[in-house]
Image 1 (spheres, helix red, strand yellow):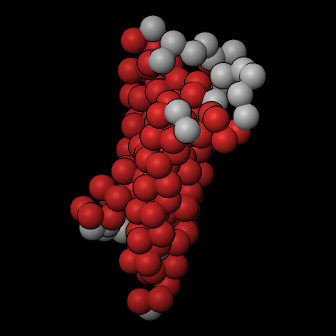
Image 2 (cartoon, one colour):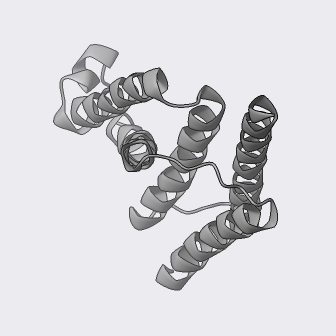
Length: 153
């Protein structure tokens, strides 16, 4: 199981590198922006499986579920991710930040679900989906870098 997870991560990173080198994307990003993108993706993605597990308790009202630490702590972390996201949007390119954060959230969510022992019904489709997300992010980066080059001319 661990090798499948690492294989998926390797595939994801390989696709990012391939897109970057193929389309000659030279749009530099500040280290703070990159760290913020990763933090938002991790906070959003990692908390989803924890929220799902915490809220699966039967015979409890929504209020009773929310009072339990298994629900409110992941929820608070998820909202912290949203706060970082809004701060990030103030200083970064919107066309880059939105798809990257959402794509990373998907990857982190799949990885966390896997580590928690949740089964993936269709693992091949999950890998293909991650690949499409990566390609989409690469296309956003390409479009953004081409727009910047056109603006310079």
